[in-house]
Length: 219
Ligand code: G3P
Image (cartoon, rainbow, N blue to C red; front, side, top):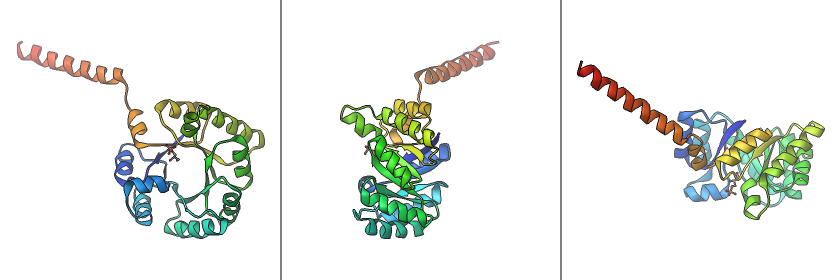
């Protein structure tokens, strides 16, 4: 499974990418608002760090506006992917952008039928929002399973991008189901490295090493 970072923070992206090269990045208006920086400048910076798909999200609600904004974003770098919402206008924009060779990430997907329609519109990525479904008492991960089954049934090439990830358990379950990508907030990414037994093991090795050095000195 590919790992994207779900952030518009250049410093988070640099930090993560220095550990293991990231497969991609997803951004949205909320994430860029948190950074309080210019969207285009930030996207350009990200393209210099990560060699993989970088999602940028227009704010127009009509297809024409989404296509116009999307084409401007796409000019920034070959790796820019355009996010469109799962609406009829979004799907019209998806069709036009995809025909123009611009990859589309259909976002705000909350049902299997939405994912089916997005695949038929030619979207390159589909983004089921797991955490937000969990928030309203549904099981976000069931949606990933359903999309995987439907896409496998009909051989759709659309990549399943598990989004709105809130925990390391989400990441693991998405991988077990066979999602193509998980886009992960930095905090969750950091947590994936942790295990109490790893820390305990390192401490034990260092303590034993110190003990040996003391023994050798006293010989
Ligand atoms: O990639 C989509 C993601 O940013 C949404 O996450 O936590 O706002 O539901 P969240």
